[in-house]
Length: 384
Image 1 (cartoon, helix red, strand yellow):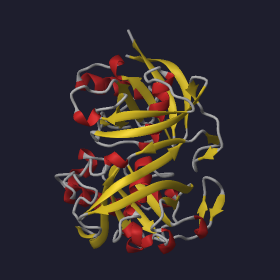
Image 2: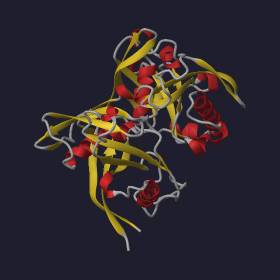
Image 3: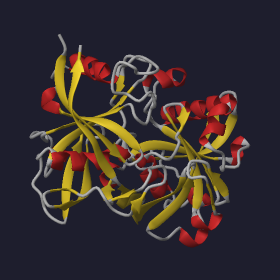
Image 4: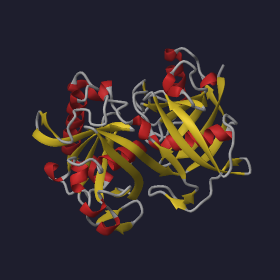
């Protein structure tokens, strides 16, 4: 006999996920993970027997429920949200990180499911995220009692336009590694076996990241995702950098087991000054004047075909922190502004970042991500 579970498949930003109500899943963690794996058809590289799309950007689950009553950090929350990165060919779900793209869909999902009280024209949904133990604010356009999906806001990597959903991640600073700058430094020297020493900036907001210069790895920073994925030597070096940064940030105990212990975070990105480059997905050229800098980010040991939502937030904030590699690559005339534009493999992404220095510490006042979301289907998924 198969068990049926209500689900919604929803595109949030440049990712696609399965959204589930917390009450519809087993309370026991092991049983819950087993159920999620079955829903996605994992482990199987094609995920042929489930809803997964055989790609890290489509093998994601969002579990939504009521906010906890005993956690001060959840005060004022309308709901709780747990994100899971479902492994494709391994029997595990990684709950250590957060997907910024699918976060934009959580607010819309909650409105579709009548989990929050509506306010038109914009419903501000306060979401307690269990992964990071932080509050997220999702501003969803609403009309006639339902989320607005049509609009002219365009995201590189997503066909057509949609209604802009704004998500603020300012409260997530330091949630993974203990501080916005986990080492207390804007730049450090990492000692990486097989590579030597390399300059790196470690920043923690949205998800923890390590940034390196593309030129220090003999790259231009304009490479396509396919070119980077085909360069196995570069992939291995980037994974080593990620692993050793994770140890320095206190997130990983053994760098040799990083892909097993924490495959998603910290994330690693290569940064470069603005340059012309080819957007192979959009089949056009991106001009240097359209960007403040360029970045290419690795996700789950693969180059991201566009750019992750949490990476967007972290990269934007890093560009406003003097001394970081991202700040160094950013156009000097744009470093003091709030709006940040940077080029990724599929085009130019925009974010807002505002950071102030209070005493000896930087405080993030604003770290937003503009996304679109669309409900694709709702119904029952059958679990053996």
